[in-house]
Image (cartoon, rainbow, N blue to C red; front, side, top):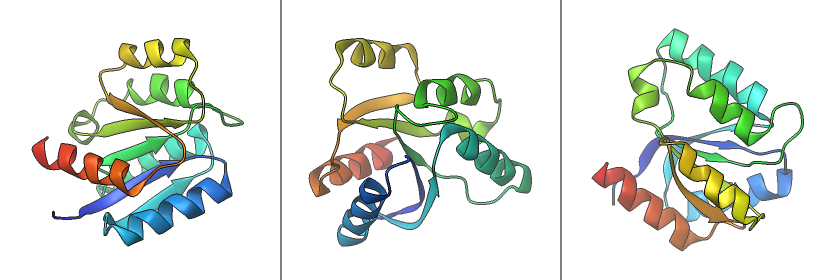
Length: 135
């Protein structure tokens, strides 16, 4: 399976980020991983990438519970941006929460493809790669 060019992790947990990047490398998931500590940092960074017309990630792994701007607030702001690159973006919510309200709320966002429980496994990433190649 062909690896992804750019992916993005939006999460404030350095241990989760480290582990996920290691697994990404192990399964040859992508060439580049952008990492943002919260939704605001991610919005600013992704907006700059769009403005500069640089490599926009094809997939984002988004945590829900973060300081400054949480995952839900990030989704609200991201869906206001009109750009063809965002229309082709796939977002996976990555969370340790199994709150049924979160699982239900995910359905409100067309851009959110699925919900993955932490920690991310090699099998999860293989599934994401398959989805992206069919997309």
